[in-house]
Length: 146
Image (cartoon, rainbow, N blue to C red):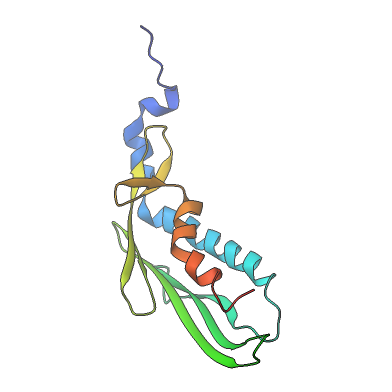
């Protein structure tokens, strides 16, 4: 029987040492900014709350904010909307909080069996886009946005 492990995975210890929460968090932040930019293009300038990313002090946090007035196109009733998804990290984990500061997700870095660095959430290995989707879908696609 021959060894089927690719050469680059033989040194899994070095790969795992490079798979850090800090590095993943920077990629997460860039991905979220990209997601918000795409979503903003589908929101008309009038009648809907604004959506943006606000960076925290230092590099350990950022938040996505949906804030402003929503004018119902059918009833013309105006509703003030304010929702936040907050991302923070420390040395060992990434935390996602909702606007009530309730923790919605806790993620750690893991080196998967295929040699890819991913996030582990509740024992499930996630690509960054999957984690962003879980954390942001309720904010980006709700009753106040088209």
